[in-house]
Image 1: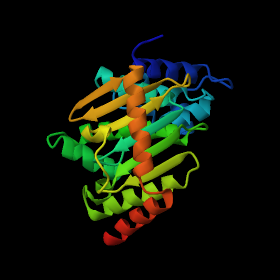
Image 2: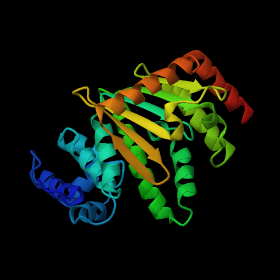
Image 3: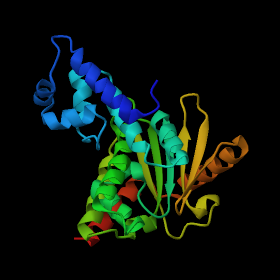
Length: 269
């Protein structure tokens, strides 16, 4: 299989268009069916430029390709990241369970577009708007796993400081807190808040993700400033899992956590 997902996207698109069951579609025909422009279809088939984020799902539905174009789009976005980040994203896509501890910001899987954009701008003040937009697309594409037919079991513990740390305009934070409350309504998602006065713990050094594969093997991803590490040694994974379970025990209940989030939203009015 082609190792370049962007090139494969182009080839699969052209093939699907030309082999369309009813009749061979022209680029103009496909543009009309996909509600885009002929120039966009031409550009995509030549492998040039970014893929419009809304188009892969439309193509999968049109050609009945069972998520092929969506997957290739996600892999194309992931190519812009270093190898360790790509591996982390692959593990995340395949996970049946995701545990997240974050002491600084809302985890990427739960970030709103405005909140994520604010973080990305703070992370690289010299980045162009186009670069920020590409990074944003990649980050938001990760959230598709939560909208799939079989989303992973998601368990998140947030340090209370995350609720108080403003990024961008106050409305950005209000929108993010509202999104957290919406996520908490999902049966496969649990979000708890760890109070500021909680005792120190093993995971204090940074944000940590636990990604459990279908074979129930768990990898621990540790993130710090511009670095990501993946821990797979069983002894260290088990120690980190016990630390996370301790955090869950120290965290507020789901109801009290939701109340705290609502209280903070009211302070931002």
